[in-house]
Amino acid sequence: MGKKKKKKSLPPRRKRMTRDGRLRNARSTQWVENYTGGDLVRGYRNWYGVDALMAVMELRMLGVSVSEEREAQVRRTIEQKAAQTAARKERRRLEEEASFWEDRDENFAYIAGYTSGGAAFGVTWDEWEEMEF
Image (cartoon, rainbow, N blue to C red; front, side, top):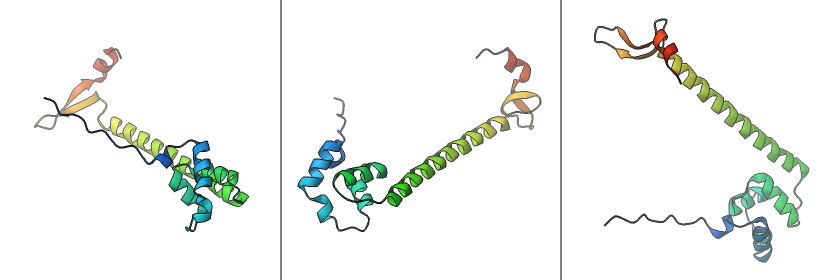
C-alpha cells in the first residue's frame, strides 16, 4: 500500500481573513487598545498578515491616526524593495547571459567539453545555423 501524503496545516485564521473579517476581529478583541509593541503599523501587519500599506489603511478605518509621513515612508519602502528586486533579477539575467557566452568561441557556437588533449568539441557555428528552433 502507498503512503498517504501528510496534509499541511493551514496558517492561523487571522491571517486568512478578508478585510471585513480583520476589521471586525480587531474591533471585537480591541486589538489596537491592547497592543503593547512600539510600532502599531508593523504589529498590525505581522499579526494579520497584510502588507504595510494595507495595515495603514485598515488602522485608519479603525480610527487610529496614522500620519501622512508614515504612509509616505511605507510607500517609499515598497518602491525601494521593488527596485531592489528588479535590479536583482536583471543582475541574474546578465549573469546567465554571460555564462551562456562563456561556452562559445570563434569556431564553436556551443562547447560541450574538451578532449584529454585540450581540444574543444561541440556544435560549430555552421551546424548551429542549420538547426531549427
